Amino acid sequence: MNRMFRVLGFWTGIFAVMFYLGDMKDASLLFFGQTILFVFLSYLNLTERMYIYIFGAYLTIFFAGFTYYSIFIMVPGGGGH
Image (cartoon, rainbow, N blue to C red; front, side):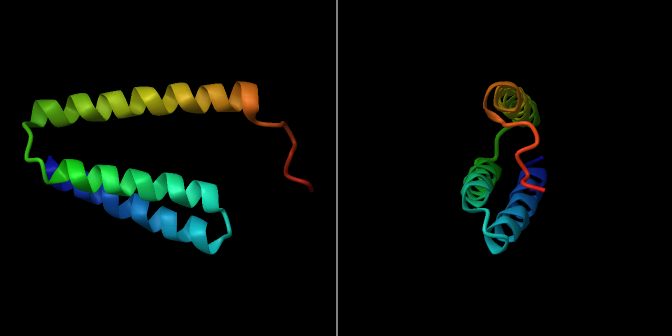
C-alpha cells in the first residue's frame, strides 16, 4: 500500500508541474504540497488499514473543501470567454 502512495505522489507531482507550466501558481503549490504529503506518508511503512483510513480522511476533506469552494467561492462563468 505504501507504493500506491508513492504513485499518488508521482501523479500529483506531474499535475503540479503541468499547473506550474500553465501559469496556475496556486494550483501548482497545492499539488506540490499533496506530493510532499503522499511521498512522506509512503515512507512511514504503516499498516494497510492505516493507509486506507488516511486515504479516506483525505478524500473526505477534499470533497468537503471542493464542495465549499464550488458553492460559496467559485464565480459561475468566470472563464472570461
